[in-house]
Amino acid sequence: MSNYTVGYFVGSLSTSSINRLLAKALVRLAPAELEMTEIPLKGLPLYNRDYDDDYPPVARELKDAIAAVDGVLFVTPEYNRSIPGALKNAIDWASRPYGKNSFARKPSAAIGTSPGKIGTAIGQQHLRSILGFCNSPQMNAVEAYIQFEPGLISDDGEVTNDATADFLRNYMTEFHAFITRVSSVLPRNA
Image (cartoon, rainbow, N blue to C red):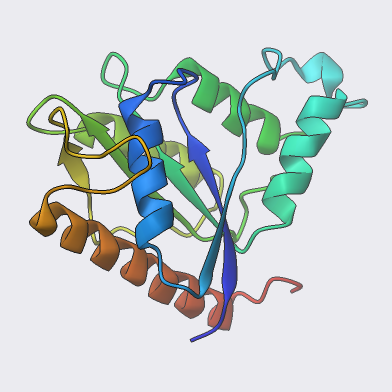
């Protein structure tokens, strides 16, 4: 299979986010053929269509970062049965102005963790609805709703539970295969 660059969003702005730990684990467990690069959310003003004719530099950097990758991975918490406002704001910036949607035809996947037993299942469903509207091909299976427990992932991204590590490694392998499939039918420069 081919090599790809994957941009990943951590939906939380918190530096101590458990989803940031999950992202570190996914970077460690990704196949060697995936080069992982974080796309930061911090510093984006609230989206306002008044900016459509002249995006601020931080928003142009966001769109450029998405354009530079072959696929996008969303690692997100669930806030009030949805995605965090900072992540939704970044999606709004990236998908505008009309006709310049950065997610169109860009393979994507969603994963997240929370202390609750259903992980981030409802937030991810909301995210999938948004990405569907943005015309982003989505990896719908393997679904991944990770219940976080203290010590599950170390500060440097090592997963301490072998079954969870195997699951996450498989998830990233499946994402690589998904990007390969999507890229074969929706070439990047088409």
